[in-house]
Image (tube, rainbow, N blue to C red; front, side, top):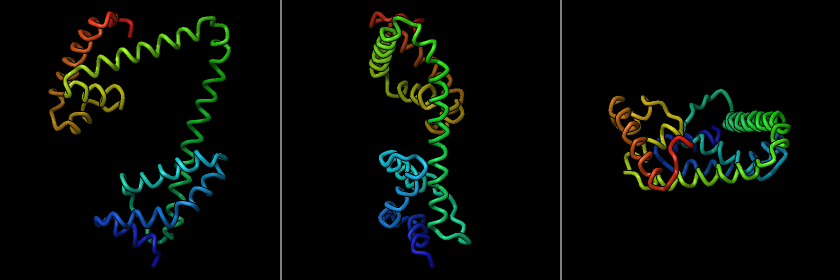
Length: 185
């Protein structure tokens, strides 16, 4: 029997040392394998961590007709491919916008102002009630739907809708106190 498979089974049954054994046994090889795709050892290390994290959180089903190592490396390859696709999209978007940004004389100033606005909003959110902060975080930053947010917060969808309404109203009040026009968002 594959040692990785038995370690994974132990982890699924509640023994956290199983995942520790998996990381110890497969980490270096997985990093080197992923590095062949991304050609950056630091990124490969991060993607290997993402692969192990995926095992711990999502707990995908292991099919015993493959070796555990093959299965794990397939997950690692998929994580690397997702990263490459995202990176390619960012580079493509950047190239499309490059011409526009070079013509804009005050792009640096605008970036600074955007960052300053983010800090003001973050500070204002920090002053809200914890329940308001949570609902805004889940919906606007983590991009959960109202239904998903309701499940996470153990509330009804209607309660979440009311919380969002009240949180936005409270945020508007805080932003006005900071001298920041809510419409500027």
